[in-house]
Length: 69
Image 1 (tube, rainbow, N blue to C red):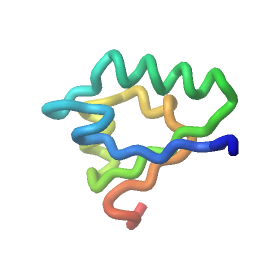
Image 2 (cartoon, rainbow, N blue to C red; image 1 turned 30 degrees about the vertical axis):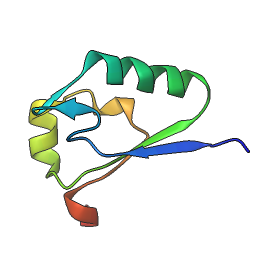
Image 3 (cartoon, rainbow, N blue to C red; image 1 turned 90 degrees about the vertical axis):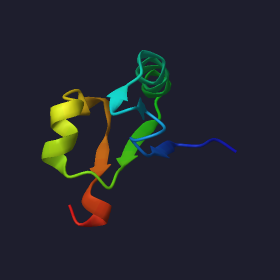
Image 4 (cartoon, helix red, strand yellow; image 1 turned 180 degrees about the horizontal axis):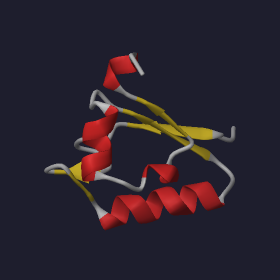
């Protein structure tokens, strides 16, 4: 079985204490290079996410604000 996408949360997975870890970003970049998609699922408001992590182009899709956006 080949997985085509990864869905991940921001806080506690990509980021620790509100800041994205360089290891997580590098892993996501490697995953994208393999042809897979990366979807960010977060309860954060989009403006709050952009303030702490402006590199949202790393993700193919963002589900924000508990699915409201």
